[in-house]
Structures are given as structure tokens and as C-alpha cells.
Image (cartoon, rainbow, N blue to C red; front, side, top):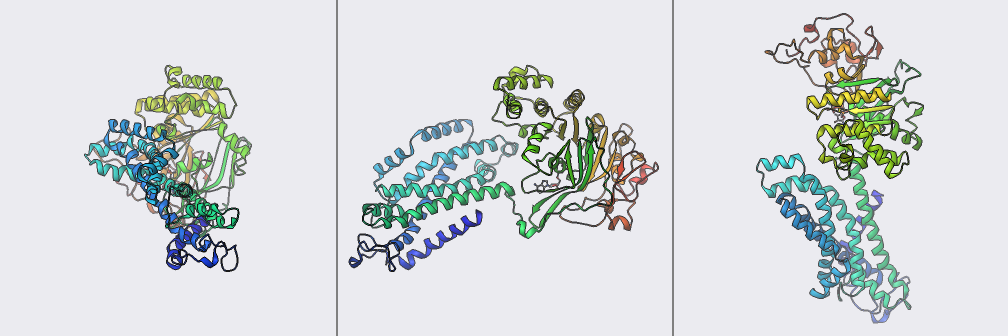
Amino acid sequence: MAILSLAFTLLFIVVAIVAPILWGEQATVANPSAILTPPGPGHPLGTDALGRDILLRTLVATRLSLVMALVATVMGAVVGLLIGALPTVLGPRAQRLFSSVINTWLAFPVLLVAMLTVILLGAGSNTAVIALALTMTPSFARLAQTLSSRVGGSEYLAAARMLGVSRSRQFTKYVLPNIAEPVIVNVTISIGGGLLALSSLSFLGVGVQPPEYDWGRLLSEAFAQVYTAPAAAVGPGVAVVLAGITFGMLGEALAGHLRTQGGGKVLSRRKLGAAPTAPVPATDVPAAPTALLEVTGLSVAFPGPHGWIRPVHDVTFSIAPGEIVGVVGESGSGKSVTMMAVAQLADAGAAVTARTLRFGHDDLLASSSESRRTLGTKIGVIFQDSLTALNPAMRVGSQLAEVPRVHGKASRASAHRSAVAALDAVRIPEPERRANQFPHEFSGGMRQRALIAMAQMGKPSLIIADEPTTALDVTVQQRVLALLRRECEETGAAAIVVSHDIAVLAELCQRVLVMYAGRIVEDVDVRLLATPELLAHPYTRALAASLPDLDTDRTRPLATIPGEPPALTEQLPGCAFAARCPFATDLCRTETPIAQDHQHGGRVACWHPQDSPLDRQRTLEGAVL
Ligand SMILES: Nc1ncnc2c1ncn2[C@@H]1O[C@H](COP(=O)(O)OP(=O)(O)OP(=O)(O)O)[C@@H](O)[C@H]1O
């Protein structure tokens, strides 16, 4: 669709530039010897009442028709943007005032506004453009107002205000760039609608006046002879419809492109080549047949500007029913991407491959609508940012009630009762009243508890919690964690908890998966994290040892792991941690380690796992202590 709409847009632009230069004169001069000639070799669409070629006139009219539609749409968009978005930086009184103006303006019928403009300014092309711009302005203003209200409540705009950034700069640097994408898409789509509206005005005789002509004017002239020369209406009619469809399609294609790419420039799939797949390993230890979730060889890649970005490689793990497993690792190690891929929530454009992705009896790779329906209720997801995870425009109770309404086909009243009960179960006081409130009326801890309640609504057998307590203070963290554990114990649900915080995982989990540069490097009993010398992978040891405890000497800087993880676009051979590892050998730099059972009862992917208790100092050799 994108290529077709681009090709047609280009064609219209070329015709609009070239046609008036080549045929402008010829299309205007009357030819008494060829009046109302029917379509034929000399005149493919025939001639009009003055003997002028209709095809040439249609082609020449392209410029005026397109320019008028473009100018009117841009005028409407600019004025709409100013009215809708500028009040965001002017304060609440201006916002209220402009909101009333927009509402009143929107209440006027479009045709009435257009006719009033014509009456006041007189018929003509300029009036038609102004009339169209005036009818488009309020809808652009409403769009800009809705989009900019989100920016208005953002922390970055509040910070800019505190820093004393001028209002004009707030508008041009903070508000406009953050609402530009949907506005541009809307302008493109509106050009098509504008063309049709302008043609209608000219057709009615209140738009373009002779000797000027656009497609609407040509249609109007053709209709005067529609019974004697019906072919005369074909040219301008087809042009109007085709141009309208082209700009509509172009806007849709642009919107689709921005949605898929998040606005970033990425290589096309053709240039990127085949999506990366997980290599077939020497050993794929089969998960216990009773495993609730079995993942083998999971890889995720995103199209990027210079090739595939590969944040997750060949990840293998399984979760037993009722088990609570933690996932830990440095920022960017692929924890969230892995879990979102398991929950079938990977970002648009992601290439997700796996050898096995089984949840209960469902093969998630088959991705049938049946397995997707299962996921909606059987896997509950708790997102990191409770404010963005909840719909700000919907009452919390209604959001919770969506699950029984959509999946259980429950009545509105019984779904609401279930939502209130779920809020009560997560210890939200006055659940009936709170269910009728919006997310911004909840505290951070309450929102997070509401998310836990929401994840429980479908009675899932697996909960995926992506950093559920990062945004909360320590006391609230404890309560939310205790709640999550209690919910899992009571319902028998398994959970995967992603966190940076080893202390959080130690509270909650039985087992922890340690991720480094998109791979699981160690799968270990969570209690061993308290004794780094019993861990097997040098990275896990360094990670655990870098955590301060009560015995840590507070007068010395905290331990860090020197070096950086490899770039996601690089595909280096060997172990990704080799460049930072004090035990690395040539084997580590050339061969990717295979996960193997370890004496600590878990598994480790390392060519030199540390079997015996080691001196903490040696593990961190080279580290900044
Ligand atoms: N849609 C995307 N397109 C391109 N790269 C992405 C996309 N989503 C994630 N990434 C990249 O994948 C890598 C892993 O991201 P992920 O969010 O899984 O890390 P993480 O371990 O959860 O980190 P954190 O703890 O900071 O949340 C990051 O480098 C991130 O930039």
C-alpha cells in the first residue's frame, strides 16, 4: 500500500508541475470547430462546450486542485495546533478558555461554516481555501489538545518549567516535537478529504470561478452536458476520487510506518536479510514433562539502522507449576525483552524465534487465536510503570472488569463485583470507592497493587512481573512483594519476577536466572546469592559480591565490575563476558559456552565454572574496590 500510494502521490506532483507548463495555453483556448466532440483519437475524453480538450484541462487543473487542498489543510493544521496545543504552556485558565472555543467551534455544522464564509467574503478560490481551513481548524485543535494534554502532565515539561525555560521554547522544543507524528499523519489524510470538500464547493459554484478551473469546476461544467456528453465528467471525477484515495492511503501508510518503527530509521527487512535464529546446541536438556513453561533456544532481534539488534540469544529455561523464579542482570541484559517475548508481547517488528515455547499444553509458537486467547487469562503480566500500564482515561474498576467481561463473558454488574473483590484481596482500602477512581487518584503503591489485582483477574497459572517494585519506596516495596508471594501461594500460580534488585529476589524467589548480554549464564538457588564464593559463573559472583551488606566497609568505594557488555549489533564469537572475566582463556574468546549442570544444583554456561569456594578478592581481580 505504501509503495502504491507513494507512486501515485509522485505522479500527481509531476502532473501538477508539468501539465500547466506543457498544456496550460492549449487547455484554455476555445476551439469553435470542435465543440462537444465525443471521445476519440484526437480527444480521448472529448471536448467541452467551447471545444477545449477535457483530458488536458483535467491534467492542468491538477495543480490548482492540489495547491488549494494543501494550503487549506496546512492553514487549518497550523491554526488548530496553535489553538489546541499552545494553552498547554500558557496555564490552566488559557486551557479552559481555548477548550470552550474549540467545543463551540466544533458544534457548528461544517457546511454552515463554509456557506457563511462564502457569504461574507464572496465566491472564489481564496474564499474556498479559507472556508475549508476554517472547517478543518477545530478538529486539528481537538487532536492537538488531546495529544498535548499528555505532554502537559509530563515530568519533563514540569522540569523545564522549574528551570525557567521560556514559554515559546517550551512550546517549540517540548510540546510540538512530542505531538508531531500523529499531527503529520492527520494532515496527510486530511489533504484527501480537503480535495473532495474543495471540489464540492467548486461544483456548487461557490468555489473556483471562471476563467480559473479546478476538478470541481470541471465536474460542474461537465454536469451541464451530462445527457449529451456524459464522458466529460469521467476525467475530473476519476482525478478527484483517485487523489482522495491516494492521500488517504499515504496517511495510513505513514501512520503504519511510524507505529512499526517507533519513528526511528531502520533498514528494510530486505536489506537486513533473514532474521537471526537460535543455533542448534549440542545439548538441549529437556524440561521436566510437568514443567508449566518450557522455553528452549529463544532469540529476539529488532530491525535497526545498521542491521539486526540482537538483545536475546538462545535462552533456555523452564518453570515448574507454582514456582517463583527471579531474573537478574545488568540494565540492557535482555530481561524484559525475553519475558515480553514469552508473554507474546514483543514489540512490533521484533523477530522472535525459538526451538520450543510451550505453556502448559499450548505451543505458543503456533500462535493460533486459541493459544492467544489462553494467554489472555492464563499468563498475567505486571508491568514496571503502573502509571503507563493503566489507562488514564478509564476507572480502575472498569479496567479490572475487562478480563471477566472479555474472557468470561460476565455481565457488567458481576464483572464490577469481581473487580471490587480483587481490589479488596490486594488490601486496597474502601475498594468499592476506589474502583470508581481513575489511576491518577491512586498512590504509586496502590496502583502497583491494582496491577497485581488485574494480573490475578483471569486466575493465571503464570504471572510475569517486570520490575514490579522499582518505582516504589522500600516500605511499600515490602508490602507489594509480600502480596505477590501470598497471591501466588494462595492461587498456586507460578511467577517470573524480573528485577535488578537481588534483595527483592531473595525475598520472593526460590531460583534465579542470571542474564548477561542476552544469555542466561547461570540458573541457581536464590539462597546462594548471599555467598558469592559458592556461585559458579564469574559474572554472577562479581554481581553478588558487588552488593553491599552490613559487613561492607563503608569507608571504601563499592565494588564495580570493570568494562562494558558488548554492543547488541556485534556478533562476537565466544563468551560475551570474556572481555571482563579474570578467568578467560582463548577457548572463552572463540567458543560460546554451553549450559551444563553444576555441583551447586543449578546450571551454568561457562568454560571455567568456579567449583570451589574462592577468595572474594580473586573473583573480583581487576575490579575497582
Ligand atoms: N523495540 C526495540 N528495538 C530495538 N532495541 C530494543 C527494543 N526493545 C529493547 N531493545 C534493546 O534490547 C536491549 C535489552 O532490553 P531490555 O529492556 O530487555 O533490558 P533489561 O535487561 O530489561 O534492562 P532494564 O533492567 O534496564 O530494564 C536493550 O539494549 C534495549 O535497548
